[in-house]
Image (tube, rainbow, N blue to C red):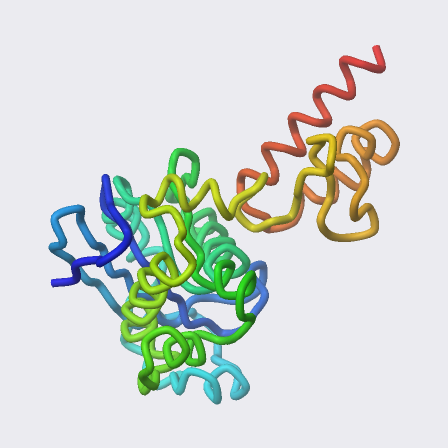
Length: 257
């Protein structure tokens, strides 16, 4: 049983980790996933499984996580696992190490492929890597050594990574005097959208934090370069980015009428 010493949960928190065929959420697939679900009373439920990606695992990916084609040959596909996985996560806030930029986008794309709805709206998302980058900028293994003084012997084994991410996140709350509830911690690190594709400028306007329009206001880009926003909508950004873009395009059409 895991009891956070510093985080205070008001609903279950699911810590996620994926191992994959590569680093592109559009083209790559999950080969292993793990979930550690921690309830407010400290009780926990864990789930880990290999996943058959229905494609060869590149040698470069196997070199990272050690999972081979033979390891997943008899494993279930993601489409088979998706309904049960989404049910397990239905009442949960989400956490992990690096999930905002990779794990969640890929998971959302996999759910779309499987035809199983998975919404992020209404959840707090806690990314221990975002906290670490603000203060230290390191890897999960280095974070575990830095915050807890122990080595991460199970690096890139999903079940070990989720527990390590939970321990690091809890230690970060104490070390930096951060908010102790997922909702407040989410607000502390999510300025506009979960993955940080947008930010607010000094006037409070939503501006791009990436790409050719970096630092330009979203509303301005919607008026002057709507084709770029149409391109954004074709990319595997998280749903909150797509919602912001659609709202900006809709507002620009009203203004220009």
